[in-house]
Length: 96
Image (cartoon, rainbow, N blue to C red):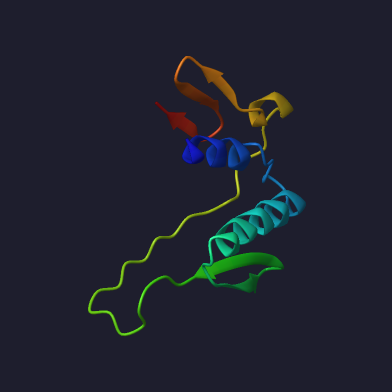
């Protein structure tokens, strides 16, 4: 159930502004590093960009996963995760 808890934490960040993006990126960085995944941070237009490498450097195959933390502005209640049965509802949350 760790995935649901992680999703609840992520959708609770109002990342429609620079402060929210920085806070969310800090949480993601801490989450990765708590799992011994090394990260480094770049800065683009004053905002953090996290990079995490997993696996051997000399691997035959490289897989790149790219995501974003920013969202368009919304009402405060849209950032409060809500369980409805076995579904998590709120902005960007569509789990079953």
